[in-house]
Amino acid sequence: MAVDQLSSTFSALADPTRRAILERLADGEATVNELAQPFPVTVQAVSKHLKVLEHAGLITRGRAAQWRPARLRGRPLEDAAGWLERYRQFFEGSFDRLDDHLRAVQKGSDG
Amino acid sequence: MAVDQLSSTFSALADPTRRAILERLADGEATVNELAQPFPVTVQAVSKHLKVLEHAGLITRGRAAQWRPARLRGRPLEDAAGWLERYRQFFEGSFDRLDDHLRAVQKGSDG
DNA sequence: GGTGTAATCAACCAGTCGGTTCATCAACCC
DNA sequence: GGGTTGATGAACCGACTGGTTGATTACACC
Image (cartoon, rainbow over all chains, first blue to last red; front, side, top):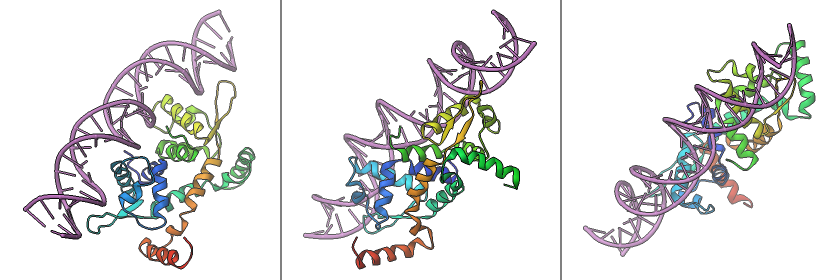
């Protein structure tokens, strides 16, 4: 099991079912049964997914009678986005040219 | 094994060794031995990591004599960042208030 | 207090993962 | 061609993952 936060976050996001759950939660909180409905898996499987998401801090669980509504939490997503942001320089244009550009930058100034 | 691109990308990023490899590659291309040096694992293990990264499209491999330099490729990172970007609304401020805000928005306009 | 529903727990299973060791391939160089 | 170095291939191992089924807990309602 990944110990660091970032690994937990990316690991949680690596599953398409879990990403779909998060997308659904972006529209507002939902119960396990509601979340499980669109997927061809059992409620127990979704419950496990929610535990993974909760462990990664991507959701919090409420308590209302026998329901445990899940709610999206943005912070880990923000951290993940922050990590990726550092590679923005590689996003734009051809990565082939980027290498030359980087080498030039490294020689010309501090990193 | 994850079939979709986004899952492959997040899965590849879920390992701290692989993220460190990418960080190193941001400084320019490097060989397997160079990449393996900082880590307390064998070269073979790093070679496996590179295969995962290559499969996810996060790196490309060159060919120079008996060396196979790895080079960072930004495209999948950009896609991952794009997916996360859709949650930017959840980044800022308290997520508790966000829920109220979302409900208000949902009532006020088309959902 | 018994019944029905929401959700989790527990045990199990097949497949994948990250790592190892040993063996092999590929290219350079004398 | 043989030795050395860079890198991968193959087999194996323990741990984790995503899924199942069956049992159990927690709460509402009559």
